[in-house]
Length: 317
Ligand SMILES: C[S@@+](CC[C@H](N)C(=O)[O-])C[C@H]1O[C@@H](n2cnc3c(N)ncnc32)[C@H](O)[C@@H]1O
Image 1 (cartoon, rainbow, N blue to C red):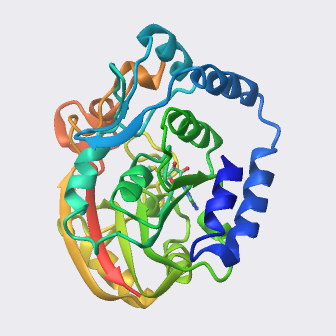
Image 2 (cartoon, rainbow, N blue to C red):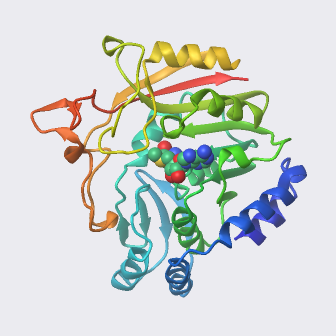
């Protein structure tokens, strides 16, 4: 996959940073992780399947092929948990924990067209959105995702596609992106609240954008009635690594302070059990949003904080 990336990347506007991206990715893939043989075997098994054309058939990234459902399920389950999706491969519906299409529907009509653009999807998970970005005609859509398993999930899906889309996922963090990165559209979705230093994340996003580039920022927020921001003392909706939940006014100020222009709030949506659900594709730990909320009040998390609500801001460099 990295070879394919290198070949194609060098033909795009990203050519000045390709070598660095390839080197950093190879380093990340060469870590000692005891799961890698299992994941590689799963991909080798999936390679036996005849690949097919990929399209978006709402809500699925859909691959038109014929599969033995039992065998493919077994291979894909070696790569659990499948958080992002959903995917349809032949007759097999891979129902991920998240209905990514619902987020995409809230965003897609507000962004500048991606056709011909270089696009960065920060914290891409297994690349569900990166595929959708490529399907919009991006010149190149690069997902960066430090969690290795999700990179293997991306490869598993890519193996099944006959004419690979111009979508790639690399095992990198935003802070590793080379100087001189220049993306026309940068997506940071579900990533800001995981950052200890939110202003640094916003600055790093700006650093990888072209002049006049567009940022699409999606993150957890709180209603103003709860104050300007909440810093969870312990967990938030059972998640350990949530550092800050701003109000939309506070987030607007952060974006302004970071130097972004034309800042627009385009959506605020409460996360529902329709969008985040427990499925058999997330493994033994089958808890999902309904287990993270107060059983007597779904406006509160199990820790007594406001229940998850997400905002989408769009702005320019
Ligand atoms: C909650 S998931 C969101 C996935 C997807 N973007 C979405 O909106 O559904 C956040 C992802 O960001 C990744 N991540 C966290 N910090 C990151 C960083 N500094 N750079 C790139 N990815 C990061 C995590 O590994 C995780 O897969």
